[in-house]
Picture 1: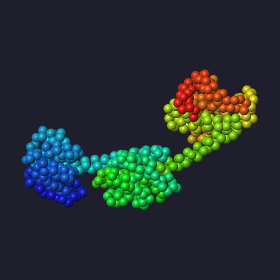
Picture 2 (picture 1 turned 90 degrees about the vertical axis):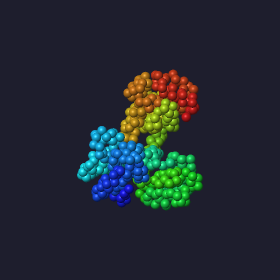
Picture 3 (picture 1 turned 180 degrees about the vertical axis):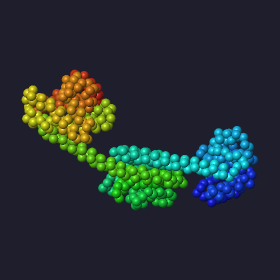
Picture 4 (picture 1 turned 60 degrees about the horizontal axis):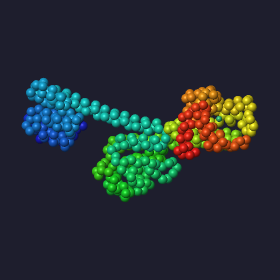
Length: 485
Ligand SMILES: [Fe+2]
């Protein structure tokens, strides 16, 4: 065996032939072109060498003692289905060549061959390797891009963090993943999410301030003693190596993504570390967005509550009505298995359903006696007024139709548009039931509330005329199951 151990950039080629003259000549020619070569006298030796350290390309004779070229071909394909094998054949039969190609050979050359022919085939083989490795890199980049896109398109913090962990799971061969999070302005990190065998353990790092110091500005990997000095006793049996990537806003570390392995000698690959860094980087801006969005959402919620209170301050008889209606709506919609997005919209609509009363004179709203037909028309106008107030607010676009139609009736005899059945938005049908129940059940200065039993009887009596029977049924089931919310 002759070996050229210097590994050159051009690639590694194994030459297998029992004729020493041929292996020597081939080796000289290929080394002259910058390839690193090694030779073997038969298929069996070739397989052994390949197993020790795979070659980019194998050039082999067909007829050899111990193990021939075709047998070696199938053995190598079993080790690596992408191995590139070029057959040399002195028996110029098309059949042998075709058999070799069918069994997965990359190409064949006929003996005796010219040096130029051989080099052309070898160069083509390396071109194929280069293309498929570029393709692989491209695939990796596309995967990362897709993952980071889905991270950046989420608005809720929990969603961002769980997408992040899922993505890391796909990119890194870890036995456990963990996210430590520290809300801006606070000092302590706490575990927000954990997967795999570390989810059973309370904490992996003994002291998180040491972790933060260790991390400094970038990602870090630990194994052996270095790791032992950092991790908690309880984690030692399952955590043998660890990799941490911070996600930061400005200079501040918002959170840390940790990957753990339980295998003794496992070192995370550069590719895995790169993937984690890309994800951590993308997560930083998404986490920041999610935090901003949460801020915005809470001030928005306060604004809505403020508006609802403004209505109630004006209409003294209906104190606490908006909130009671909202709680009933949420309970009924939950009983109807509505989506959480729908329930959120309905919650806002419940608080705001009578917002249009802001535009109605207090004398009419608070009148103790019977309303004149004109006054009643003015009161009815609060649906339109509600729409006019809310339609300017883009956040509330889904709330507007519910507020506008909350006095329609299932039989089409309501207002403002006289819609019937399922033409009325579902949210408005739910509000009709909740709104009427709460009105019937509440005391007014000029009359006593009907009480729960009577109010429920009235809902049943008007199911299918005033109310959507589905909503009434859900209301009754909800009361039966949980009592009044
Ligand atoms: Fe109303």
